[in-house]
Amino acid sequence: MSEPLQKLIQKGERAMRSGDILVALVQFEAAYAIEPLPAIKSKLAYCLALERRQLQKSLALCKEAIKAEPANADHYYQLGRVYLIAKQKRHAIAAMRKGLKYQRHQPIIDELTKIGVRKDPVFASLPREHFLNRSCGRLLDQLGTR
Image: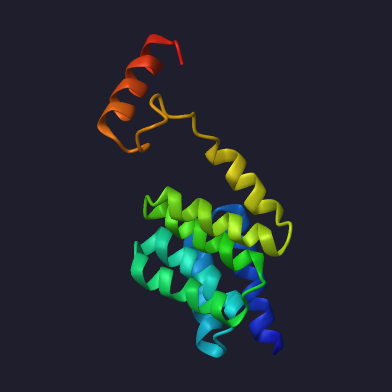
């Protein structure tokens, strides 16, 4: 990996950690133009989803990165974050859990902890999405009995 490419990646990662996604996006786009590495693709995908709401392109980039390096948990983490931006929580959790199967990745653990655990459905014999489970669950939650 060339030195200018390494510097762009480091600046992008530093910007992501500090929450400056626009700067990170610019850095990762420049790095991607030099060499489209899987690590760059997945981080660029997250930045695109958050800044520009290009969700389809972001999902495609993450999936390409996973296809190139299937055992890298960070790609699954970025994919999960893109799914969360797209309001697809179930897919996000599944992607992050799959990443944990490959290696213990603390950001995934932190994100899953932040998402939390769902309560059991009121009527276990019905699907979670069923009208009765959703409405009775909300009612019991408001009454404080759940």
